[in-house]
Image (cartoon, rainbow, N blue to C red):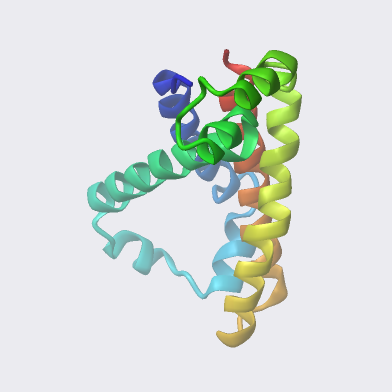
Length: 158
């Protein structure tokens, strides 16, 4: 099982690129700012190099983990603790290896992770923080699309 580090790095850029569009004036900037209580002053007061640098590092970690969600052969690798020489592992890999390595398959699993993991987490946090449901939809929608694209890149880039 080899990691495609180039695909992981490209996928890690997706949150930055999509975030620029999603939270920008063309899409949800005004609605997001109102729902989150963000102001231009708060935006300008942040240390942008640190924010973007840490965000990129976290996106690399996310992309690295995403491959375990979208590439099923990783599950075999994990279950056998990397010992793929065994008869059972070899039989499974001979039968299934690469069959679900496509852009569409990765997109489905990425979107599912967004809907089934990210949305509930953000919804719970926003409920306790008394944030509007609109903010949950904006932020969760962003992550569903991001994870779908990341999953697509990681699964399909063979």
